Image 1 (cartoon, rainbow, N blue to C red):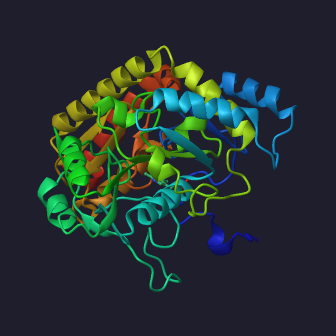
Image 2 (cartoon, rainbow, N blue to C red; image 1 turned 180 degrees about the horizontal axis):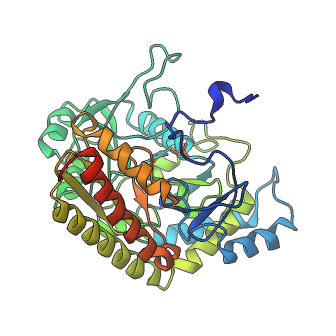
Length: 401
Ligand code: PMP
């Protein structure tokens, strides 16, 4: 008997043929109850920056857990890590720690509304920013103020909305990761930064995925655009629960107790997660991670594109750095993937073939594949499986002779 409500712990449609009994993980692999190993290309929704069970992180947890892992008082670590974040993230004049990405986004919207005295929120078609009421439409959340939406990479649409000066904030991922991996077009971020400043709209970068993954100073540092507020999670503590809201001092000081915006969670700024965050930052300081991951991402995107060209099927591969998306039945997309234009049958066929070869991809083409340095040692295996799976797709799905 499965006592999980609806049999699962998340609405993401995990295929029937994926393992349901994961008990452990190491490096690029997850391992099930029977000891079968699968190469993981989803990597904790991008949270596992260094792969599974990274030894430096294991040691950090072991060392710090002995000192206690949960206090109701202020900790030395929260002050220390906030100073480090202030020194590396361009927008981080002030920093607050929370627990999940959704919490951090909710606090940033709340602060924007309180600071501007406006209620409306502008966001992006196909984006995802979390579970709280007013972020993602859901039954059971009547009369909540959902954001108005504009397409990604569409400057005119942003201008048209924001010129009304009715919006508290414009919330977006600087690189979309929840709508297929979609980087910003040249000058898009620069132009929306200008429009937000002109209309006194708070620009919020949701760096829950991109933070520390694209660059240590975030996508904002990578593109050299400073938002008013930003939120980080996932990779910052390499998969331990921690999130950050940071930004402009005046907006950040709308939070209680200086201001009157409520910001609290029992587990905020968890000391174990903060210790890991500090270790993650140390590991990233020399920049080698970024050079190697970018190289591997480029190499894999090029390889898959070549294989697709060889068998002459309609598909696209796009991404940036260690992130990529493979979609069938459509060409490259600049405004986020349009799922209704994708061939889901082909995607399902492909990921089933990959799973037969013990490689697990995200179950939807709108989710991003994440690479980490541990994939380097299984890159050959991944490439062989991709070539064989595409060949099977050509023969048995597209029925090409
Ligand atoms: N923002 C983005 C860009 C995300 O990808 C996610 C989670 N996938 C969230 C916010 C919400 O984070 P969490 O699931 O930790 O609440």
